[in-house]
Length: 184
Image (cartoon, rainbow, N blue to C red; front, top):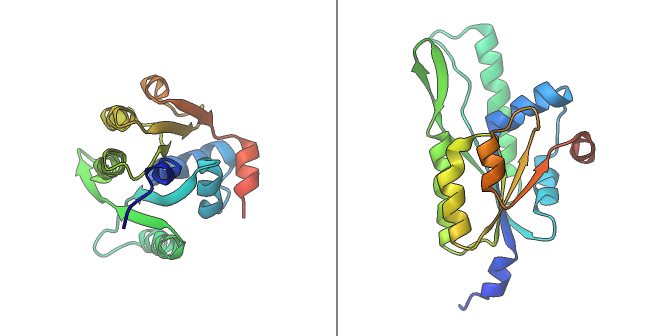
């Protein structure tokens, strides 16, 4: 089967840093529930959405877990189950690790970066839409751009790294109008 290279250039992939999106929805917009499929399609604009990749970690549970930990875990488990049923969605979960006395996500950023580079260098997409505020993605963004992919960032103005804003081709703040379009 021959692939039409022009049609590949018209495809986009959406890469969502789930912890970042949750944080800005909570802090900037009052914790709205949003339709992530519609959100993803809007972010792609005129490009066909190949797939949305959602990266996050399950919440911590001690052994035995507290009622609050069990509630948070069950809520996230239900959310992940629902996301996995959406068309063209892939959920990638990292692990929580303890650094000092604090829990931090492990394998989440590297999974996003690896997928961005793999799809870009494999010429599977012409546009990468990234929802994050983390400058750790700069090398992967540069690799995607070097592969000829247009890299667009959607971000919160209250939580963004300046180097990230400078590294991407296009940047759009997530604002109340966008949230209103995708609110459930």
